[in-house]
Image (cartoon, rainbow, N blue to C red; front, side, top):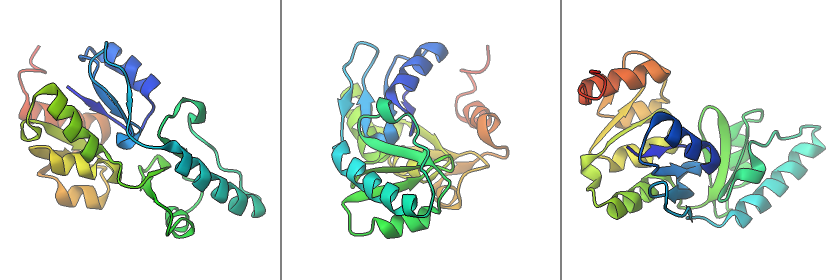
Length: 195
């Protein structure tokens, strides 16, 4: 099992231990990854450009009296994440022409170096694990999961997924969030949940 999230490596390290995986994860929307508990974290993106983009946004929104609420700013190595308190399309417009990608996870807006995503990093992780990408089941719910879902042999989403994710998924659960994940796992890996 490989956990893949827009969240930070520190959260994913703990989650891997808590749920009993082998410790491999992809974090910050593909910006970082680690193979196993003993592996060292690899950083896939230069965070400097994301920080410069954030500075532009803070100046722009500051003039409007809006302060961006940053998420785990000190714990991030490759991206910037902040609350969805400003329109994501406005952020994309303000940063058009910049070498960055903007991801809307329905929880936060993320800025990272252009070309970094979970799909690209997933393929690197699969190769390092010696497993073909088409042997994986990818499950997601937002646009940051699209590359991973496309790269996996089978791509699924939970019922609350964004429309773009639903459109590229092989299967969409009938229920949202964690219950949807369990539904998908029961469908594809019934032996895991049979205990």
